Amino acid sequence: RALATRLEISPSAVSQIERGVLQPSIARLIAITDALDVPLADVFGIGDDRAADDDAHHGFALQRAGHAVQIPLEGGVTFRRISPVPSPGVDYFITTYPPGATAHPEDGLFRHDGYEIGTVLAGELTIDFDDERVTLRAGDAISYPCSVPHLLHNTGTEDVVAQWLIVHPGR
Image (cartoon, rainbow, N blue to C red; front, side, top):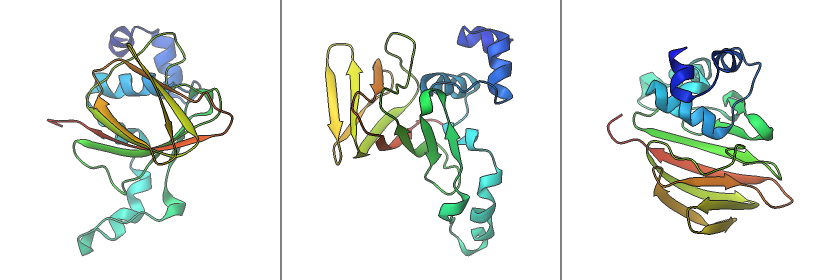
């Protein structure tokens, strides 16, 4: 109930998200991890780290492609953590946005904790800021403080695949 109050959603919606009945938007997922003060990487669970842990005694972490966990979100958007194990203060992942998908389906821009750096690998990603719209194509990169109101969406006709690094100072 406390989390629902902080997120300004119903306790029922929180319960449905917890049970996997309701898939949150990217913005809602980030709001949840920010409210809980945990890294975004934590939503990927610990089961996917098993393969990485097998090599930990060698001084490195390794995740084979077949062990990567992909998280489905609202609107067909998916998240896949890139780093083989959670990295303190850093979230590193790939997102896929199908045509028409948005990070925040409710009207308006959103903000969250951290500093975001992204590179589009395929497709065309549109980012709305307060007073500007930016379109990124394959190979384009962008960075901005997450406190700047923004909205990511795919206005094109093919899937957008983007690689993101979110840095959380102090975590």
